[in-house]
Amino acid sequence: MTTATVTSPDASSTSGMSWTPRLWGTLIVLCAAMFLDALDVSMVGVALPSIGSELHLSTSALQWVVSGYVLGYGGLLLLGGRAADLLGRRRVFLIALGTFAAASLAGGLVDDGGLLIAARFLKGVSAAFTAPAGLSIITTTFAEGPARNRALSIYTTCGASGFSLGLVLSGLLTSVGWRWTFLMPVPVALLALLFAIRLLPRPTEERAKGGYDVLGAITGTTTVLLLVFTVTEAQGAGWLSLRTVGSLVVVVALAAAFLVVESRTAHPLVRLGIFRNGSVARANVIAFAMIGAYGGFQFVVTLYLQHLLGWSALQMALGLLPAGAFIALSAPFMGPIVDRFGTGRLLPIGLLALVGAFALFLRLDEHSSYPVLVLPSMLLLGVGFALAFPSVNIAATDGVSDEEQGLASGLVNTAIQVGTAVVLAGATAMITAGSAGGDSPQAQLDGYRPALVFVTAVALLGLLIAAVGALVDRRSKSTPLTVPDYDYPAAGSNAARTEVLTNR
Image (cartoon, rainbow, N blue to C red; front, top):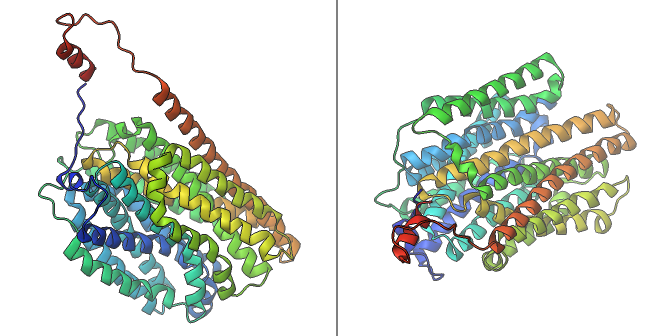
């Protein structure tokens, strides 16, 4: 089989490390959108009590203020990634970013809980298109190698900063008023949109060739939407209830139908052969475990600090600041670090730091002090995310052709959102079961500890997969290329020998 390396015209112009102001502007615009997408996943958490009090929402309704965003984001990422490949990355990015700004404004102005949840869902849908489109613009604009690693490190570190700083900003804004957690992204998104119109590249040939996989889009999107909906609703309905079990059976049936469709259609939404790339396959599983574990951990920490220790929103913002500050400050240095050590080495180290951060928090009690419990975990969390988050995104798009970069980006972002929904649902179930409905400090601790053990175990799974991947990469690099003793067309002919090797 003959293979070829595809390099876009834009990518070839950035193979050096000296970038033009326009390239830097393009990267900053994409980083702003990524920061907003990640920020919205975590920023609403601290504001939930104030939202529930003002809009008179029940606990189950409040859950959907969070889950509505995750449902739209995680459910439509595959479609968003493929739409970027087929319809044009620049076009998809601009439309989705404008929609994100409008939905943010609506969320900050509405006075009805149902409309707020609808606005959150629409924001999630728009993020499902901006995230893969933005990532694929980077991977097709910057040449694979040091330039792309540098760009992706800065880009994904902005995303990690959004995740970690979401609680910090939410605490600060909620102390003024919860609506500001929705309104703050509006001017940032509009400013990014204006600069994106001027700066994003207009390549002459941006779209992937091929038809539209309508049936694959329906079955794939419905599978992910129903899975996210099922796991978020399972806590209220019961994990063994007929509703939950029946819904999971339908999810499995839809997933099987999706795989059948993708294996038979001429132009699949997800080309299943992409998973033969070991780096891509492992990166998606690691992303699921890593961000899922963080989402569960964040939920436990928020409940513990606010409900048991009685921290205010502002105290929480300042207490969690070290992790976000470390990630943000590390952004300029991650590109050279990735070039020097490679993602295969950095992923296990970063995940080990995350596992350590989660495990250290198992020491929580009724009177834990900040320097002893919270600060060490936040520092390890910052180190872990700074190393692992850029690395997993680079690995998820490594070796993928330009015309499938949107697909690869959509896959890894889908893994992140589904992981967040699944692990958060599991952690919530363990908190409820462990506390047995009690409100005493000990009952709360009995719920938090099993949830922390669960998220630590999920992160440990990601660490094991990353370690296995590092061993596989090391073996493949240390194994010399051996050439079988073929009967070449002309003995001693280098051209004939090259032809056999190229077409193997």
